[in-house]
Image 1 (cartoon, helix red, strand yellow):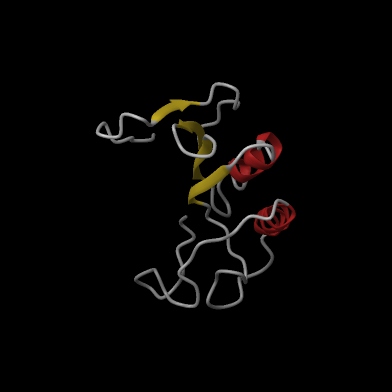
Image 2: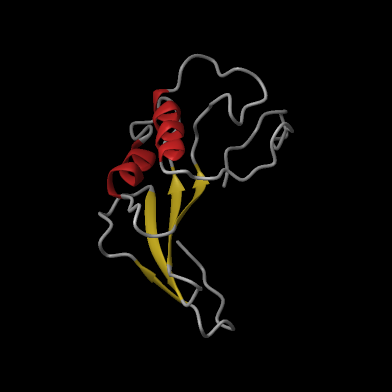
Length: 127
């Protein structure tokens, strides 16, 4: 689900029908931005042990478009040393694939980094 402000009449937000449906990721196009429209992905990536673990991130990697600006936001449920305060408990293949793809695409990750964002001292991987 995506909300768009009604008082920004120059912005048009529509679901991207070219992105295949998936229960954990939605793509929307935001038109009216300069210099170009942006495709925004709302993500809930299944956590370790979930039947859909890593599927949302994999779907974005499969159907993302390097020819247009994209933003990936949501709860990725992945643990990786780039954003975790302590080493993850074992490897997370979906996180490694995501990080590698983001590096290849020259993505920039927004933080805060190096500080706890969860009540129990961990880092929530929300974008």
